[in-house]
Each structure stands twice: as C-alpha cells, then as structure tokens.
Image 1 (spheres, one colour):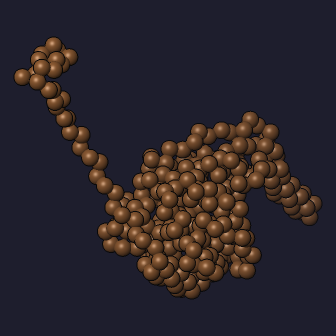
Image 2 (cartoon, rainbow, N blue to C red):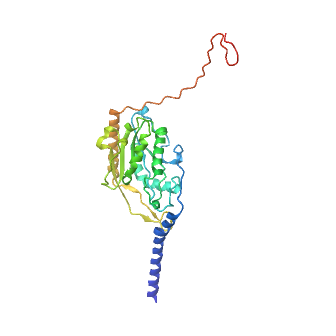
Image 3 (spheres, one colour):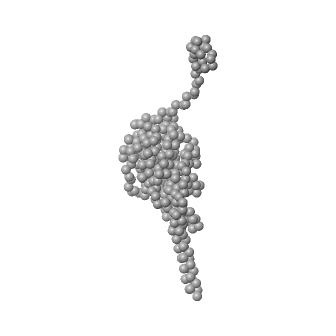
Amino acid sequence: MTRHRTILFALAVTLLIGGWFLAMKVVIPGQLRSGDPVTVAPLDYEVPRSWLVRPTTPPSAVWEEGWAIDFFVVPPAPQTAQPRGAVDPTSTEFAAWQLDQKQPLLDALSPHGAIYMPAIRWHSPVAETSLDSSSVSDDLTSSFQSYLDRDNRGRAVIFVLPSNLQNLLLSLERAVEVGPNDTSSRMAGVLFVGPRGFPPTTIPVLVCSAGLGDTCFLELAASQAPNSFEWLSVPLPYRIAPMSLDDIAESDRAIGAHVRAVLTDLENNVSKTAEPLEALEAVEIPTVRRPGQIDETGTTGD
C-alpha cells in the first residue's frame, strides 16, 4: 500500500511540474500572442524618464577641457513572454531588469567616459517579428538626435551593443546622418559585447572616424550564467542571468586602449567643435525719419 502511495505521489508531482512547464512555456505565451497588440506612444527624449542611464550633471564640453568619450549604449531586448506588440520601456519592472542585465558592462565603461542608454520600444519576443522593428529604429534615431542636441557638446561617441544585434548599426548610422555636419568625424567606433568569436558584420562608414581604420570596432567577450527559475512569476517565468564580461581586467585594458587610440586620432586629425555663440539679445532700433516725413501717427519729423 505504501509503495502504491509513493508511486501516486511521484506521479502527482510529475504532473504538477509538467503542467507548470506547459502553462509557462505554451499556454501563457499562446494567450499573449493571441491578444490585441500593445501600442506605446513615441518617447520624448527631452524627458529624463525616457533614459535608463544618463549623467546627473553634464560632462565637460570639448571646447572646455579637450577631447573626451561618451558611450551610447543600446539597451537589452526583452527575452521572456510579454504581451504581443511593443513592450512599455518606461515600465518600472522592465527598466529595472534592463539595468540589471547591463550593470556589469556599465561598471566596466564608467571609468572611461560618460554613459547614455535610452529606453526604446522593443517588440515582444512572442510577436515573431524582427528585433529591428520600425519603433526600435525610430527610437534609436530620435534618442541619438536628442543626445546630440542637448548632451553631446562636441564629445566623441562610441556605440555599444550586443554582438547579436549588429543589424541595429544601420539604424545608428541613420541617426548619425541626421546630426550636425561634423558628427561623423567624431564617431569613435563600436564595442560589440557577446560570446567570444562572434563574427562581426560590415561596419557602416558613418559610425567610425576615418582615422580609426581597422580599429573601428572592439569585441568584449561576455557569457551568460544558466537561468534560474522563478516558480511563481507569470510574466517572468525564469530569471535571465546578466551577460557578464569573461575577464573584467582584460576588458578594462581593452576599453582603455581603444579610448586612448581614439583620443589620439581625434587630437591629431579632427578639429574640435567650437563653443556655440550665445543667442543675441534683441535690440529695438528706433525708426529714423527725415525732416518733413510723416510717421504712422501723423507726426512730422523736425
């Protein structure tokens, strides 16, 4: 009798676990896929909440203290079941997850320059559409344009993105195209982050200053620990481990060497952006009337 109870108990546990996996992997994603697509309005990148990472105080301008580096980081895409359509980038939970995913990389970049990481409207993985959707492309262009207008102050820019999202470089190139005429001359290359040996794609011309040549891009080897399950979480059935740099010391050395090479090239070959002129104060100039001329009030000039 005890043996039968043990078998029945084991069978019940197996069915319970199997049912949980079925619900999390099949039923819930299927329901999300069949619902109406979620739409999210374009973000206003002049508003701080549209940025996941941004300096609290403006870094020094190039005309104040010379050449320096800004890192423009593409945020991580969602990897778990979400409602069909766009994922709300201002969601507190999603923003916290994105920061958790990028924190090891942000820690490695911060000693070498200022960091800007916009929130963008990724599409849900269950939508079965290309990650480089129109909303992603539009948001990268808009956020970079806002960064150039409000924050860049003539500094050099290095783009940072996952190795498996190299197709987004075309969107970033379009973002450079709409910038001021001297923007492309201070584009300081690309940092790819991902598994070692990931084959790089052809680098768009405008994301690299002409003097960089073959040193335009840098690969930072990173890997991901096994994911851990969160048994009671429906929107996030398992916790995705952050992508961690394989060798922090080596990554720091590589980033530092790349930054120094970029700054040397810029110092030797590119003119610094001049400080913008202050807006001229409007001065009212009185109307000059010749003797005998009548003005609008009918008064004659003496």
